[in-house]
Length: 284
Ligand code: C5P
Image 1 (spheres, rainbow, N blue to C red):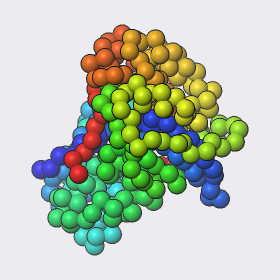
Image 2 (cartoon, rainbow, N blue to C red):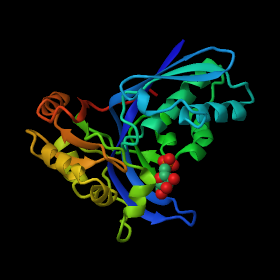
Image 3 (tube, protein in one colour):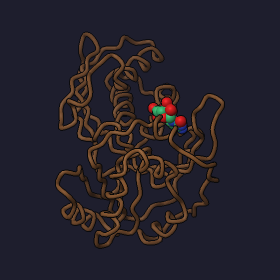
Image 4 (cartoon, rainbow, N blue to C red):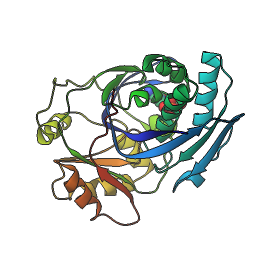
């Protein structure tokens, strides 16, 4: 049996830079990973199956269109092998919450099945196979900090990131990504200007303060509790920056270190889903 971790994707900023003729939006975003993750276990089997466990397992159905199963079938087709595996997904990330849980699961399935089936495909090939299934899957395959452009599939190096702490908070509301894009008003934002590196977390927060998440205002309009989460995060000791991730409703706060992020988590309402720690970076 193999295991793969599917860490949360956090958009430190997200600029909507344009719109394609097919309705998809052009983005400029800085994605980082952590400090919470789903887990996948993959075992040899006679056919393809998916079992769901974990605190958010029940909010997902193991239907044929589950992104993990679609990714598995896409990989089998592309590689010319039978789609055979028993996959167990332990769902610890809230569903439809702006931290790419479904994309992270699909990406982890592709990495795990590549190993289980002995394919040895490079990450770049897995990303091409996955791209039609979801704009966030390519960045989740590497699960390393990256700048995302195009509709999310054009990846380039992120600035070198300093040690920092990250706190993720979700107030328990699901937001559908297309609805948030539709609720957006106003024009487009140019791509961010980023340095080669940030020397420490405070410098990173000052740099990020020049950027924004263009989906935050429409998400707050649809789901006003997000504004309460952001206010609560900004009031925490040591909070350097608080912002919504992706299309929400999960928000993140940036701290000088993981211990301060964990201390902050303990001061928030118990009904909110909170995870705190450092950034995740998969070994190359
Ligand atoms: O990430 P995914 O491809 O699953 O996107 C879900 C939906 O979000 C899309 O169907 C589209 O409506 C919207 N979206 C978008 N522009 C992007 C990414 C997603 O409009 N770059």
